[in-house]
Length: 263
Image 1 (cartoon, rainbow, N blue to C red):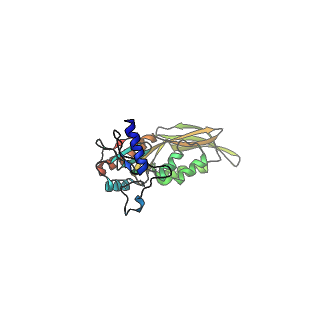
Image 2: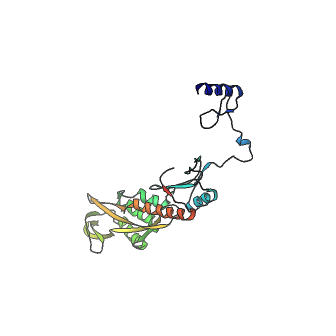
Image 3: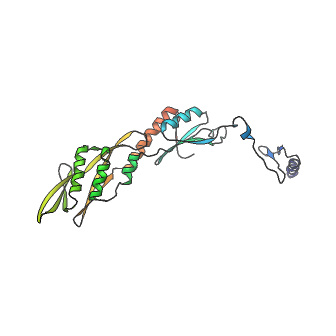
């Protein structure tokens, strides 16, 4: 066998042509030193097969591209957190191998609103800073009503020079903060009510469906100064729910049984 292989190598080196070696799978070309193999595909009217990686910006474009180029070998893979979908249009099958180099991907970019709220989730802010944040993002707040949250925001801004002393939770679900204010040499006490929770209505994924998301309002009084922040309730589950909605849409409109994982 060793002599057969060496004879084949010698013949190939002399001829520079493809040579089939007995007992080995596939065909091999023996190239003498100083030579190289090049492809002439770039000179053809069209490529010999489809390749490339297309990145789409929304689920609809992903579905459209996948359906246009899908064959019996095509397969979609998905991850839910962070969400992403990859369509391998020339994947392996049970019967044969595929090149796996013609792909379409949808990385499920988050919406600007989700990025804005999630980056400040759990971030402690000074009283005035928190009030400005609420006022800036007021259009996203659905409960309590925007006018009520605007009034709370402006009350926080107006009371930034007072000394807060305590806070208690009321039966109506709000928190009552007690403060002391100095006006023309006279000290007076006052109370400010803020909700314990509020809800925002935003799309999680860019171009996706809107979700109602509950946020818990938190505060801390440090040396009579009020510090405030909010905590989104189970944000990881909200992302997964949004991804599952896209998962169902892509599965239905492509007719594919999507695999969980990375190709």
